Image (cartoon, rainbow, N blue to C red; front, side, top):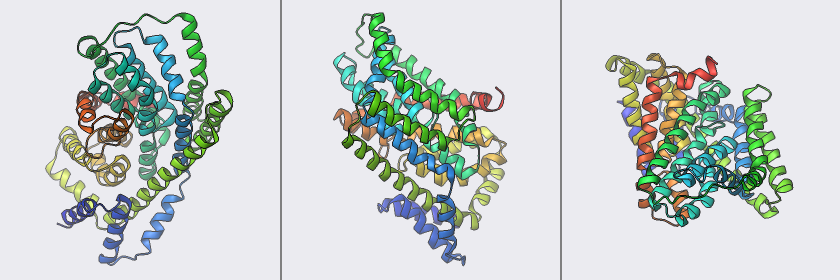
Length: 424
């Protein structure tokens, strides 16, 4: 009964438009006091949370992605990819997906990926005759690759709160990330060829391809440096993020000369405000998590699941429904922070690997980015394209189906996530 009352209270606060951080933290503090526990546990939990070295990667990756965004790197990436694949059936759509994947591998931010590539790709695709809803859905869904293809900020947060290896999580995200890229490309080629207004384009000349590739080379090299440093063990994710931020400044301000002082200040301010919001949500979630742990709610849920659900498949169906419903009202990090302490103990009871479960959760959380009314990528694309939210939401439906199919394939073939970090 206490579990139900706590959940009702949380949703009531959110429906009253109380910010997520204050709803979580305030309710957690109220639970500590009403349960007879010391309220000093709240500041202790917050300080222990914000004292984590791994969390330094969050503002550094945000700074890097914002600097690249303000420096117009997305335009060069898109031009380079389009020069090589633009003559394929639906080549412009393929170039868009590949550009999203590459920028995702640099920034780790879904919103930055959607905004950066969307600004360049949307007018180009519409000008070439692609159906508008398809274009909007393609960009909104392509942006979600930013939190699956490593580096990924939600994976950093998941690893921090579960004490799992962030590097293992990054490696586990590669297989599912590539699968989604393949799904999106295949669907885009089929749709553009038969339904989306595709018009054949001549292949670019070798000199054009060479010039475009050279222009984008520094950004691609940046992705290789950041990812290579993490995967080879040469640097922690936090150290790699710091190197990436410094390299992004050099690329945009010195090499490409596209970053202005005004753009840098805007990038720093936006990264600061996003970082503060993330850290406040993490702090509030930590207090809430401490309270529900003392109330033994995760343990009670685990026992209930163990008694009523007898197979991992049934458990994952229930969890998928819960996460998809929560995605209608929660944003990405809130879902990770609220649901991980509740669901992970039950997942481990079911014999599910915590690294695999983290990737599974991230894919479902991706769905929250493109489901109204809280899907942030929908609003980003709506703003960039000056389109109606309804058109953007309808455009993402086929891509949402593809993401759910990838979740099912991940269940059927766990090594899709686990092979690279543990067996390669």
